[in-house]
Image 1 (cartoon, rainbow, N blue to C red):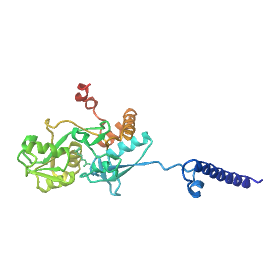
Image 2 (cartoon, rainbow, N blue to C red):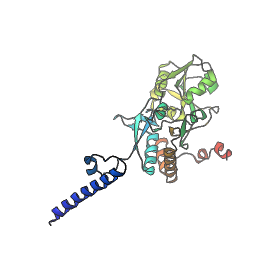
Image 3 (cartoon, helix red, strand yellow):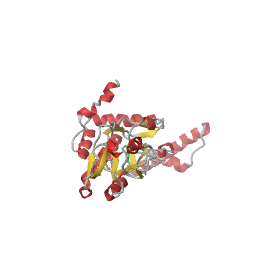
Image 4 (cartoon, rainbow, N blue to C red):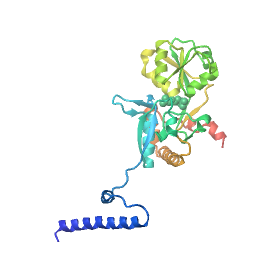
Length: 287
Ligand code: ARG
């Protein structure tokens, strides 16, 4: 036999053997699959691609570049985690309003969107270990007389609907206050500040600083206040999805251990996270 024919012979043998095996199984239990499926059997099932929902209007954490690609700190952190965990991820731009519902519905496997871990949210979803320390920050126009959070008591304040920023302002002014202006996205709230429609915006520090820095023409300044409690971002999962949660937590620990996390952090924030902040007194006290 020539090489070619012996190879063909083996191929035929292989297909025949597979057919035999399948028909043997078929007798026992399952119905025999169609022959086409049997012939292409050796190809491994494609790996599951985990769908990640993110509201990509939140630079530097998640935003869309000129090409429409979703980029940012969160994206790079999750991609690095996925690499360690050996899983594939795909980011899908998802409006903040209703973003957590997509987990329940199974449309998204994870939500990575600078999401603050809160006790209230923990009742309806599960979170990864924290991956970022954040805090609310006030944005005002340069000439503003606002010096502290309490000064916002009677002023028009812009917030993104359903965020922790909205919650703190509701606490200060009361939920029904007509001076709270809710926006679909944080950039829209900040544009309204520039236009003079609101006196201040309260949002996550990273996003406010990014906006103030990149919009010098807007003449904004930011104001911190000790009244704002520390927040931590986590990756959200459908409640009970402990399998994915464990994979992500392991990957997160790995990228923190090998320096990848610090590298990404430095790329976006100019320096690695402060060691002092990492050893947060709150978590130390709870041990
Ligand atoms: N950290 C805040 C919260 O969880 C705001 C997050 C908003 N994120 C976004 N991508 N729009 O409520």
